Image (cartoon, rainbow, N blue to C red; front, side, top):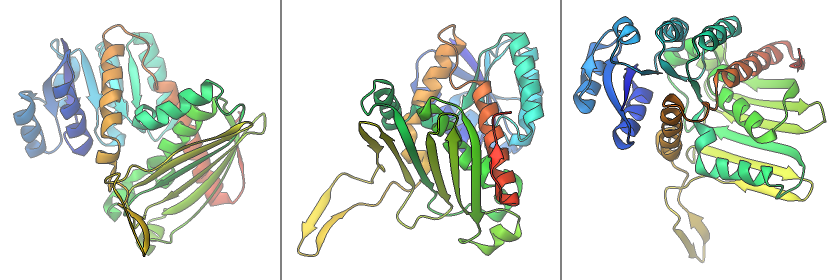
Amino acid sequence: MLRIGLLGCGRIGQVHARSLQVLDGAQVVAVADALPAAAQALAATTGAEVRDVGAILSAADVDAVIIGTPTDSHFEQIMGASRNGKAIFCEKPVDMSVDNIRACIDKVSAAGVPFMTGFNRRFDPNFAALRTRIRAGDIGAVELVTITSRDPSPPPISYIARSGGLFRDMMIHDFDMARFLMGEEFIRLHAVGSALVDPEIGAAGDVDTAAVILTTASGRICQISNSRRASYGYDQRIEVHGAQGMLRAENQLESTVEIATNAGFRRDPAQHFFLERYEAAFMAEMRAFLTAATGGPEADPGILDGLRAQIMADAATMSRESGRPVDLSS
């Protein structure tokens, strides 16, 4: 039985706790949160003890930690977990600083502990099947990947202010997905962005509407578009065009029921939020982490994937601010 310490009892911590209660071979034994009430509430549902972060990181009865705390706490927690030989699952981004991520890589590598970065979308059944069919050659050589990701509404300004910006907070998932699907590293990036949804987001120095063009050394292209607003639900679509055809993963709707009348055909809206849209992905992601933490195949996506996505997010921020493409090959 893998004994888990859960750091962060907010929304994402609760998601992982629910997965662990369903999956075999693991038990949440300790939880920690800066808000005592949040820790107590999750402890009550999992049967875990409430402890402080330091006690969990050094505990002899904790084999692995799940880090779902604010990003600015990740570095110290990764270092502490590595120092104490714990397997590590860390939500994205690993850290806002590429230099800090590289220091974490050195520490994790020296400790020899499993590390998984929380890019849950790789585990979405539809996206995973799409990648499998790409690798099987169903559409020949990939030429163009198009990723659309739009939230139903923007987060609070208080969140925007500490998020690192749309490219580091939201589009970082799409950067990882682009790498996951393309199978070739990108060497050049050009980003544009505007504050069209909420002027307060622009006043906070961020954008809420953005697009990025990525290119590989062989000339393959990926287009990513993000928006903090979608009136019809959580918009998550991918299209991959190849030499011999096209693969597409569509939105997940509230139901598959369609009505046809003399007014036309009508279907339900897209599922409203990421928790329901990616419920299966979160479960599969945690199952993969448990496998890696108990001697199975290496954790994937790993910490290097976290680094590469962060480099791309930083480059997109720089490109948007400068108005010029940024070289990713160095």
